[in-house]
Image (cartoon, rainbow, N blue to C red):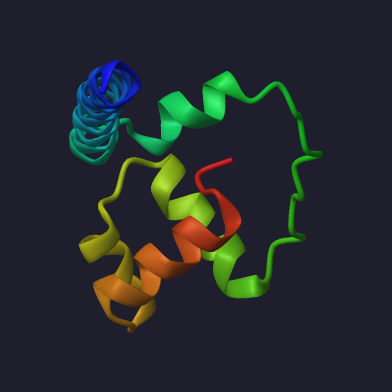
Amino acid sequence: MKSNLMIQMYENAYRRAWLELRKKERKDKREQRNSYQSYKIINDLDVKEEPEIILKLSDKAKKVNLLLKKGLTPKECGQVLGCSRQAVVQVKSRYGLPR
């Protein structure tokens, strides 16, 4: 009889400890899921440095680069070159312009 009582006490204590642990794990997962960290912050934490690949400028990219250096907006560059603003923005992001 005494041993059954001891077993029940241990089972109850173990169950309470297990439930508290599960509650803490769920809280930690919620915090991880809800925490926002921009990729810039995450990338700053990584020490790995990859070599930067610099593409050689195409003819269109050279023209866009020249116009951007002179202070024109992508919309104005598109009007001068006869293409859309989006095309200029894509060239700008692809080649990292202005250089």
